[in-house]
Figure 1 (cartoon, helix red, strand yellow):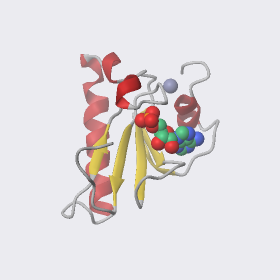
Figure 2 (cartoon, helix red, strand yellow):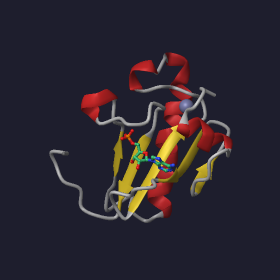
Figure 3 (cartoon, protein in one colour):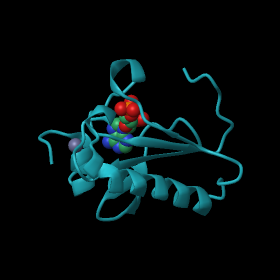
Figure 4 (cartoon, helix red, strand yellow):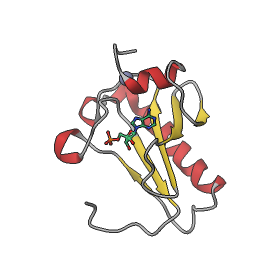
Length: 115
Ligand code: AMP
Ligand code: ZN
């Protein structure tokens, strides 16, 4: 766990969040400022600062994140209608929290290009 990392603290249960799924590798919780009817953040328990810091040994974590997204989509009945899984990396990508996370967005028609 990294010092003063918001998402490490949420994963450790030190800061409350509306957790929708957790296991030994990942935690998923509702975004505090939702940008869609469904907006869940999926994070690794391991502190990884961002996309550029992912290494080959993290492959199980990344697979699990995708599996959680697929399971959420099926549970929420949006697998067929569609959804979006987004990672923002660094300043130009719009990353505000330096702990790897994926936004699972669903429940409305998404636009392209993104803002
Ligand atoms: P990003 O801009 O990609 O780094 O996304 C960070 C996300 O974390 C934003 O969508 C925020 O709304 C969300 N967020 C920040 N603090 C919290 C919190 N305490 N609980 C849940 N989501 C949060
Ligand atoms: Zn962290």
